Length: 232
Picture (cartoon, rainbow, N blue to C red):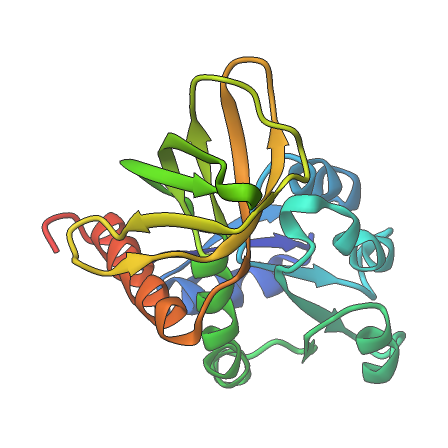
């Protein structure tokens, strides 16, 4: 499984050390040499982690402060690169999950990212939307039912297509479906997160029994592996 990271930094030595070190961990690195371009990228793309040079890049601290404002990256794992101006405590208060101190070394990077990898994998799995084409029965209150087709599935919900109309925020007593390729029946509680006039909607899972959640997480991990390693 390849993880994706944005490095907001113009320090050539940092890039020289970080890029090959992270690529050895199957972490792809996109580099933005300016804070403004970094924010543009964050507003339009999703990353499992974001690394920001806070002390030697003009506007770097602002990128860290604003990171959680970007819907796609509000839960991304964040790393602050410091060089004596910003304290570790200040970096954490601004939203950093991890801190790297200059000079950046291969050994220090490996130690930090070996600790962070489980958080990055969890973020990848949480966000991953697996394309599917499966029947789903939505059971509402007062025994009202609607049969729909799920077009993608994630840990947090699914996108659906249907004939008819749905109201946003409408509670769903049960979202009934079977995990593709298994005999595992799922019936989480949910709500209609959004709906349009084209017969499309998003279902957000609100309550998933622990055993069902474990099956869903394992199923998504297998799909992630198959995407990262075709033929898996």
